[in-house]
Length: 287
Image (tube, rainbow, N blue to C red):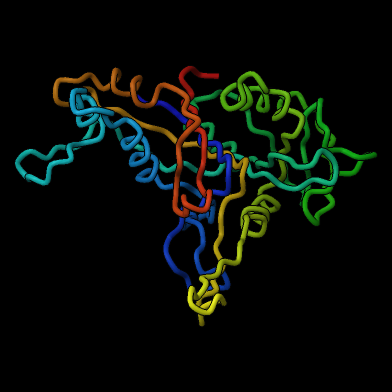
C-alpha cells in the first residue's frame, strides 16, 4: 500500500548536501541524473517520526516504533519500520512574473514524474518550442498577450487550456483546499528546457556571514553563499507501507502517520533562521 504526499514550503527550504566547490558553498540537493531539486526521503521520515513521538511517558509508542523503527541500539531488538519514504521531488517552482506577482511553474517532465507517484490518469501536454507556455483559462499571468517569467519573455502556446485547467484543479484540490483559485490563476506549464534553466537559476541564494563577537565585524573567511528552494515551492513524493510490523497493520500505520495534513513541520537545515517551515499534505484519495 502506498500514499502520495505533497510538501508545500512556507519559507525558504534548505535541504543541503554539505559543502561544494562551486560558487555556491551550500547548495541544495539535486537528483544526479536530471538535476531536479528534491527533499530526501530520510528527512521526511525523520521529521514525521519526531512529530509523532508520544508527548508523555504514559502514552504508548509501540505504533511509532512499528511505523518508523525502534530507538533502541540493541542489535537483537532492531527491526525495519513499516513505512518507507521516497524522496520528495520538485513539482512546481514559484517564479516571479511581471503580471500576477508570481507563477507556479512546472513542465511536462515534472508532471510525468509526478503522475507516477500520484496515480493520476491525466494526459500530459507536449511542448517542444523554447519558452513555450501553457496557461489556465483563468490566468492572471498574461499581459496584453505577453508572459514574462523572471528575465524571459515566454510565448503563449496556442493549444486549448482544458488539460492545463484539469491539472491545475487537481493540484489545487490536493494542496490548496479552500483556496484553489490562488493556485489555478497562477499555474503555468513551460517546456522542459526552460524548466531546467529555471530550477538551476531561479532558486534562492543568500549571502551569510559570521560576526566576530569581540570586534563586531565579519570573521575572516566567514562569508558563504547558501542555496534554498524559495517559499511556495511544491514537492511530491510517496510513502509505502509493509503489510504488517510488530502486530500493527501497515495500512493503519499509513493512515495514522501519513494520513493527515500538518501545517507545523520544519524540513531541512537552518531552522533557527526560519528555513524549512512547511505543510505536509497527504493525497489521501486519488484526485
